Amino acid sequence: MTWHGPTFRISDGEHIDGSWCLVWRRHDLAHEYFVEHLFVYADGRITRGQYDATDLAGLERLLATGKLALEPPEARERRDGPPEESKWDTRYPEPRTDESFVLEVADEICRLAGRPTTADRCREAVRAYVQQPTEERRLLLREAYLAVPAHRRVYLLGDMDRQDRPLRILVTDLGLRVDGDGPVATEELHQGARDYFGAVDAAVERQEERLAVLHADEPAGAPQPPVVLHEVVHPNGPPAEPGLFVLRNDYGAAVTYGGETYPSVLHGYWALSAAEPADHDRIRACATAREAQDAGGLAKRRTDWPGVRLAVMAGLLRAKFEQHPPLAEILLATGDAGIRYTGIFEAPFWRADGPRGGRDWTGRLLELVRSELRAAQSGQTPAERTAATALRAATRTGSQTGENGGA
Image (cartoon, rainbow, N blue to C red; front, side, top):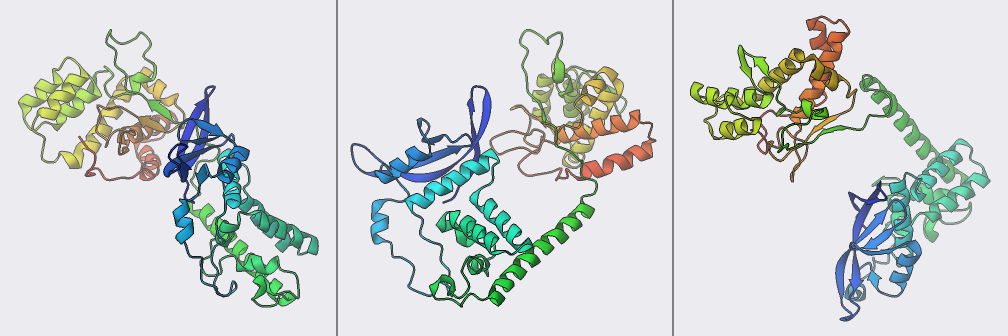
């Protein structure tokens, strides 16, 4: 079963994570089956489509009565099972049954809620047994392995070559054949399986140590929730306390850049994009930032604009916050939070949202300017500030001239 997401629902103001998969639903009158979305949420709620809600017990009843099916009945009738081959030599996933699917849904609920899944508990049982290979812990490992939905056990280790064979060896009692037709489980075979897991753990530990070196500059602690700069229309004029709106490019804060003064960052950006001086002056003289954007979009663009527009926007934003200290304080007050810049009037190159997503270069540049302001407050020299911000900028790289975005 393929799970899709993320999705969510709001319940009493709470954001509840979810995911969904496809099942077959029987039409109550026509007795025919059609494809339906099955949504699963972190609080255990399960819905067919958008409205019919149930829980795990209800899902089990729906499957038992045939109101839901994992595949249409005709597919079950014509499906041939895997060839009768050695279970040891050729490992196929166990058939997915209604019962094992319910266990899979229970696992998905645990994953969404941040609780250990059966796969997590099995891996923990493996670690415990390898550290102290007693018979009691081996039996606990077998119990944890068998708790995993049968059709998913083959994928537990993520090993395309060995699949779950090391686990099947360990859960087989000494003297018995693994899978009934495989090798006899001996202490030597068990030790080989334990060595396999020990080697995997050692490789993981080495990789974590390597990443600790490579990622030594990664910020510590939990990240702050992002600051979202929503696009806002003020038909009756801006409010007395505009709040975070002052960080947006269409906020009316005069900016002097390149020897010219513009009523807003947006005025400056579009005026500087124009190829003709007359268009530059006409855009700069527009009454509002949106009028400047409309006029700029209709003007002939500079031929070098795709290559310089990001640098121009960065310069305009630096000028805005250096020339307006109160606005700089508001930007600094966002802390280390990521900044997401939204709005349907902005090109996807500059915003974070949109039907195809966005590049959010405005948000990135605001974070960069915020870092430079903080460095300036700490007394760093311009050269030191440049070095301090270079690494931060490098972590959010991207093309300046992407085909799907840009002004």
